[in-house]
Image (cartoon, rainbow, N blue to C red; front, side, top):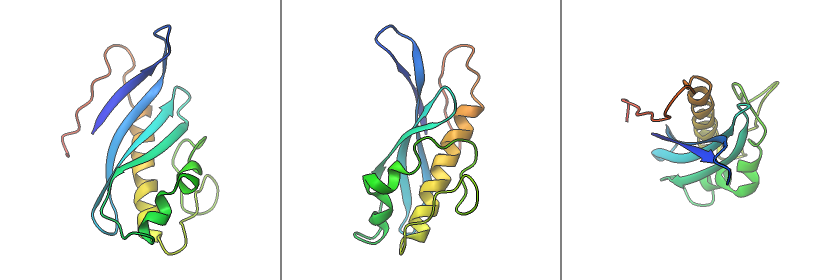
Length: 123
């Protein structure tokens, strides 16, 4: 797990890129989640996975991942503040949602007074 600050050209902190892992259908899914200073998702990118091609990977398309943009708090799979699972890729969808929620929680709990360097002992 790693956290990097994202800065403007004027060295102003704009948000964070958080690398997290969650358990997918075929194994761990590694993703980077962008989170702005308001605690909203700015983007999600899957960087490594072992999911089934054309089934689990349907939950990783730019279109599927873009549904997280603008979400904050705890994202659910139904009801308010939800992102629906991609049909046929429920386990992968849940794993991505879990990873995004983990990244949002990490940023929400950051001590922003000082250096941002976070090492997760679970990894």
